[in-house]
Length: 177
Image (cartoon, rainbow, N blue to C red; front, side, top):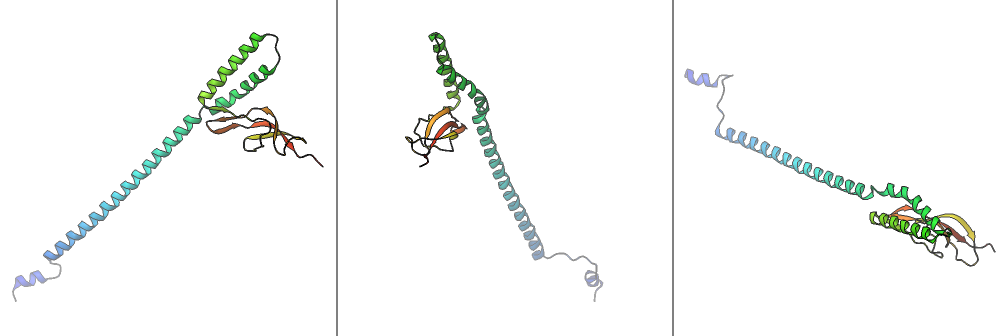
């Protein structure tokens, strides 16, 4: 036996990897890199989707805020409209004063309508709806159908389709027989 052969087979001597081992190691590295790339692409897609959802949610919240930002201000102005309505119902000897009150009321109401205020019209005889009416008084009335509006005490309003204030009404109930 030669000494060269003994040196290469000695324990602790580094063996040169074979061509097949090198190819297998490279393929394993390639597969690991592909798996990492796939994971990173998946994370990127998820991050993009989360960001897009966040952007849509933020846009919707901002839109809702802007759309209904004036709601509280308009709610605070409703007593002023009520006062105008009461003042216009009061008798006055000065027709110029009465006409001026009506003009100011109409101008204020039109301005609030442009913002989104919608007065609710509830004629007597309308069926009572607890979603838009507030029953302040329930009265027996032989001439009216049960659960119908007899009288409107205070007008109700919607703001851009949402109930701002219910209409305060007097409601008929069946007479006791």
